[in-house]
Picture 1: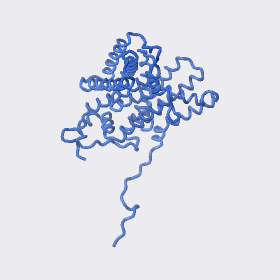
Picture 2: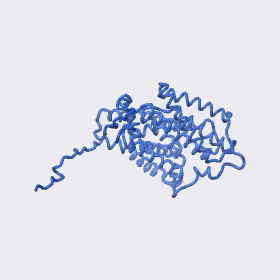
Picture 3: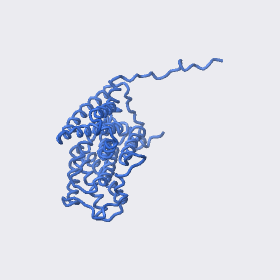
Picture 4: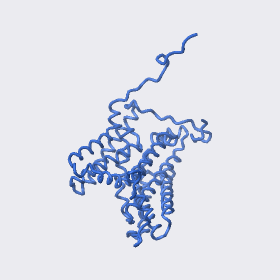
Length: 360
């Protein structure tokens, strides 16, 4: 009777050592965040490494972080949603319009706006995929239309609550704390983890990545590209609706033009995030890290007394850098320079051509 073969003699997959370039690309941005925080703490020991500064970062960067996560989802499919800023502005004024003038209960107003955001996302996806219009042009057009609706709803002015103010439970969506942390930071963390699970662990996320990598190949293996692109835009619109609710609870005044200020930071965070954690692939955790490094950098620059024009200069330069690094990482991924990258293999198509109908 022969003994079973030992584990050393059994066939196994060859171990691939991750190249140093991959480690630098994946974890360079988190390391930069730590370095920036330590540097500003040494330069500004009395103002920067304080509880007030950390709380300010967690509170003020919550809306940009949520919007950056919203921008990440269409980018996964190779599309861009330039209507994010316009949608944010419309969502936050609609919440206040329904609560202040419509006398809606605030939970119903929030749910209606979030659902409306999802519908706007579906409209964007339909225009892009079924109208065969480039996503830049299509979402810029729909965004301009949303901006017009915002002006019509507000009459070009601000929505100001009456003397009684807004319901305390509604403003607590932004002002309260949970387990010692600002509640907006908890929203961002939960949303980032949820997106990470969907994109990295569920078949839906794999299909979205395949669509973004090679739409033609996705069609050949039976993935309905149009449908999944619409899904991506719908998810983005839903998240934008939530960001509008959060912005309304923060501002407590409806400003028809405030949403445009968040458009550039959202795309900087999403594109810069595609160079971290999983270089060359847009991912939720990378976006979160990118928002963190931008927040730390801007806060430190502000406390150093920099002029107001340094903020758009910082965002513009970072955007160019992010696009360049994202393109470089994507080229490495396509050419196989990064041996740690594993090609996506979608499952076989089912009877109607949809891989979700395939037999297990």
